[in-house]
Length: 610
Image (cartoon, rainbow, N blue to C red):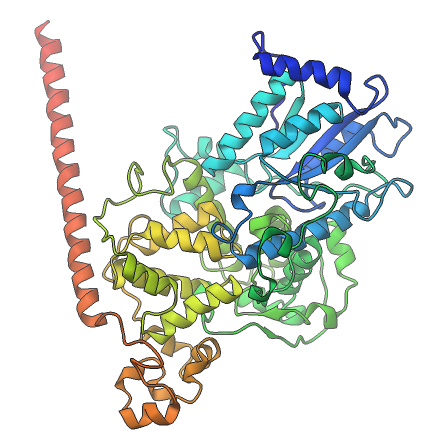
């Protein structure tokens, strides 16, 4: 799907008129000889299955006889997000690694005599509208290609601004829906005539059954197909920071010592390696794919190496996957694994195409496993579908990231409690399992989905009765894989505000993890203060006799905080408050229905009397 704007508005602002005059007179290139196409990267930080990049190169005829058209691959870092208050150090580091790898992979597409180490991807810090206005002027830009933002309000507003600028300057715009399996506008049109997204996975799967397979990944552009503009970053560095290279964490004011993510580097190369490594876990039998059941995976399993067995065989219809089949087993299994794939950061940044993942997984399920595997919603394919489920709900729900004005969200009178929120956020709740998970989040930027369930339940309907919006804000800052659609959707689910309504099913902050880790190895890893605590007391250290606490070197209330609440009392109170909120909403809806019914009857009576 693409959108093109090739005509100017009849009425222009004076600033746009002045800019066009500047563009025609002050451009760095001769308009009669050279024009530029911009490939504007935001997510989708890859060269495989990148329709914006592919179309730009095809339409520019790069690598052929026509040398008048050049391409400027561009990434703009908005200063609003270049700080630790908005984006945690682990995520920013993953992004910078991904940009470095993207520059390298673009280099593999460049003309031999045209490419230099830092010339392929131009990285600029600045407001996108300001950067693009300057780039349009300096490089005689005729067209811009980018993956459109479909759900995040900030990104949609940014795109609207840029498209309006392009209209005014007669710059051709082409946008693509390639961050999800389907274009969400198309998918929602097939889901509901009224524009209401399906609220259950069962209903969503029925929609998918009627729309057919998602678009296949587009081929990776061939070598020598990219002709970049040498020194573009040097030119832009006069107005914008870091335009002649990719900044470091220190350049952006972060401390590198805060980086400890165990799931590998950012970037397309590492992402594809991890994706294909996950698909081959278990060797020829693809046992991991065959038996994957998300609820049975462990939230307490640390990232660790995993030995493979058998010979790797990667059979799939894509050229890049065929190349991957020649990779060694040793390389694939040198990755560190939790009990899941840890692919979510790569899907968040688009260093791995979700369509590529979908089709390579589908090929194994059909041709290798012959249909003998777990099924959605808990299977590996089910995880891809859950991602799409949250995206269609985010696309079709105004105020999706808020309680007020959100039609799918229960209106619950959450407590405003900054002190308890701070204890939860800083891993000082006095419940070792909760604090260990929050410590891992802060240190590594990642926690298992069941750990996310537990800490979210504790903050909201389980113990503290604090709004899910507060929790979503913390996750949005600290998670490497923070995704606006998934993060807000999951917080609504886990707080029993939407999608899931069994608010009485609470995760025990001192009992849940015992099912997976009786010895408390996970807690001891992230909370070393418990390294000598006997396992029988690890999840409830306050129950240990004082002599045991002293011997372990961890006295509750001195070396580690006392529990901030009595879980038995707090959870019972939270359930009562949830029950009241649900009852109030039910009563309000019943009143609205009666009122609407009376209005209809009254209207019919008046009609009969005319």
